[in-house]
Length: 158
Image: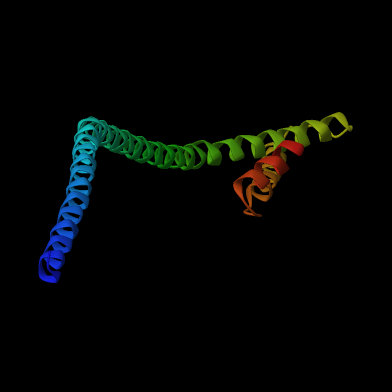
């Protein structure tokens, strides 16, 4: 054997070992790729239903939020209506209630004076004077001195 033949034989053995190593690497790579393909398909099979369920959950949450928005708007309307009703009742009943309280205050004062020994006047001019005094007491009690509640309290206390 000559040196050229020996070099050729070494090159051939080197190439045979190299091809064998590359074949082993390619076989292992193909196994890895097959397993990756199986893994991707399994993930895809399980991920698609999860994504569908997540989409359904988001839609349901959105519907619930819309309902909560409607409920909140209705509660705000109800609160505004209750406020308006409260103001209307206070304006409608408050004035006459204050007048009734003031009138009862005037009557109590007149009865108190009568019980204190003062007699009711018998003549017309004296009755007119008493009526004028009662009206003055009523006007004094209904004179604006603060809010509605303060006036009612003062009229009730006497």
